[in-house]
Length: 565
Image 1: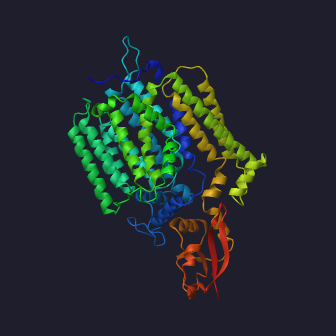
Image 2: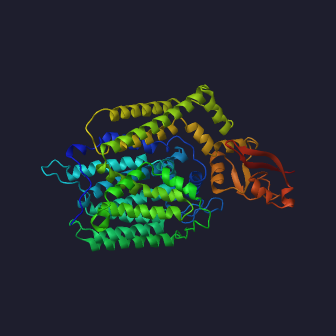
Image 3: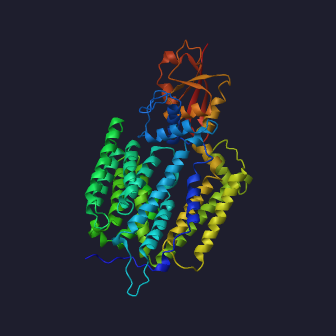
């Protein structure tokens, strides 16, 4: 006998969110952070450099190299996507924008797959609400559509999604692949052909994106879902299990042939895992969706005793558990934790039909105050930087970003104004008396997160570019090198620094200390650590011109040296 469902939902509570609002919300979230900014430090800049080398034929597509250095980040697919975009799209377009276009599509795909995954899970028999004695309960399709809207809103509301999902890195490739696999296992009974394609492409993309082991774990979970499915609409369960095994084999073989298998697990108790930072990250990264997910597991706890009959709980819970394991036992915990967000959002959606009115109102008011205060803070700092009043925020900006010159751009300002007006309309709508929709408790968190991200990527974008890109530091270094210089040696540069100097200057970079007889490279840019390791005799052939500090970090220096006559 099936345990009673905790979901009590009437038909008038499953109105779907208007499609144009959902599309506009997703479009604003995707575009903000990809359009208009500089390549940012470290992972984003390094990936851009490898994409350029592949597109220009300077390295092998199976072994990307940047001045002889292999990538630190796992995966190959992210470099292939950017390089293909550079080859196919017109050369007149900005190269840094071109490489972001496929990643915009990946983020949109992740959002779409999450919606359809929740929609499919909500249609399973175990997820249905209680049937009323005299009728009037929500219809299965409308109920599933309303929960899918709630799941997508929960994903957009997660604070940790914003930055990492807007990088041209392996993280977004893995996230979109996880969402595809998540959808494939959820939709086997409802969209078999599309689910089969998503299973193959998702597992293959995960393997080529640097996570073949996680692809195998998710594939094993999907096989379990297929074999234990109790729905009568999945008659070919053994065929599905065989298909998942074949997809896993293709993904594993591809990763092995391309050298993507590697041991990346650590012992967190012996390798310096900061447990306080990890705890803080777990608290805020998927906030507020993880609170709703935990509530859903509690309210649906009777169904968890029979996971085979309730894949709407078991499948997201497995994905969440795998991502949490990787978060704890890998060095880059945040890049593993982001892969849990689709599952957390799905579980948060199943919390919605179990809410009491008082709990929904509490979530609304807490998130309303939080995001309103955040938006006001962003506007006050921007006004202070532009006008000097109030003075304190502008002084803080100048202290943190020495040399920053504020500028005004009309289009970003108009976008920020429109986003703020939309937020005020959302708040007005939410505070009015209206017919209740079960996704209403996530409308304010999702809208507030999108508002904050849009404001940061419009009003604060010049400040963020100044702080997070290499452009100011490169310009400060180039100031001490004559304009007619074509060749510059580099010493101790990381992949990201090499890519930044290649992108922001027209120099030909020669890695390592140039030979004394070299007539071309008579200038050298070195990190202090690398220069201090040079022997005395070679170092004597160079004289220090200037030690150039990064404007936002006075402890980060680059040394500009010139070869002695």
